Amino acid sequence: GQNIDQPTEMTATEGAIVQINCTYQTSGFNGLFWYQQHAGEAPTFLSYNVLDGLEEKGRFSSFLSRSKGYSYLLLKELQMKDSASYLCAPLNNAGNMLTFGGGTRLMVKP
Amino acid sequence: NAGVMQNPRHLVRRRGQEARLRCSPMKGHSHVYWYRQLPEEGLKFMVYLQKENIIDESGMPKERFSAEFPKEGPSILRIQQVVRGDSAAYFCASSRSPSGANVLTFGAGSRLTVL
Image (cartoon, rainbow over all chains, first blue to last red; front, side, top):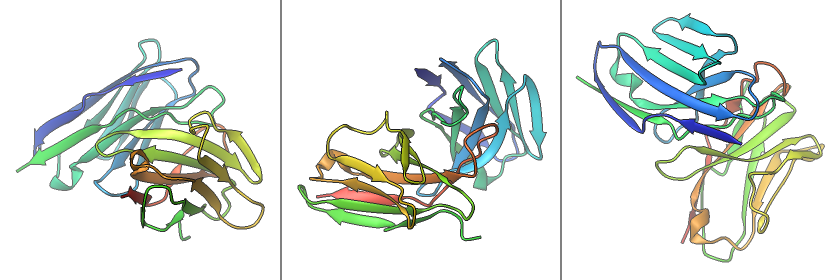
């Protein structure tokens, strides 16, 4: 089975940096995804890590440590539009199923 | 590319009625996934289908729920004899292949309200 843990809520200030952590325990692992979901909308793909280390993509970066079962999403230069839920999702061994964590609701304040 | 299309976007049913939710995957995608999201909660996997086959339905309740993805037409998630606890957003996602960097593209969801 899969067990995924991420904080329920976080608050940060516009222009700041925020790190959203995710720990997971899975019976098989084939990479980890981060998705962003604005309230009432569809989740949208942010990043995919399959190897250890940091992947940078503009203001967003994602880190993975497979040995520790740990990932984080780093958001820089926060904007109000970054207020959303951020979903951590490990991919199973067969590579055909994503299991989502409960999501972290980020509120960006002026 | 129209993306993943779901309809209806909103559906209201009374207890005991049937709900049918449709999902047309992105062009070129033959893998479809259904997820359920309760208010203030994460996405829960329900079922994974390829054309005419159910690959994994481990997340789907054994009773009242069924899913299909026929050779022609959209995938359908069917909920019979709905109860209030079925009220949720149902998201469909599709992908081109199941392996590797399996980036799922999600539809906008169908929001079911059971009165």
